[in-house]
Image (cartoon, rainbow, N blue to C red):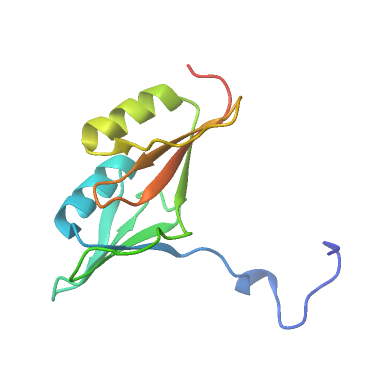
Length: 135
């Protein structure tokens, strides 16, 4: 679609953007600790009843991550939704995330893959994607 054509009902200040990436989780406390440390985010809002927490980028630049407590573990197929974490220091970030509680997932990589697949403490897959040369 052409960038010069205005869409019906749209204006510059009402564009849709990602506000939160929501992850339902059974290992709720471990997940909050893991994702807060992994992303270096701060708690923006915590449900007084303990049902969810919203983590936010302290610089205001990134999307929120919302963790919703599930009363039982996930069953069946894995979710199609996952996070891609971008970095210029992939090997260091993978090591740091594994140290925080992530696990390497036995993915079948194509030659030249620029990503590493990990599982968070609740078994959700996410990728650490290389963006350029490591320092």
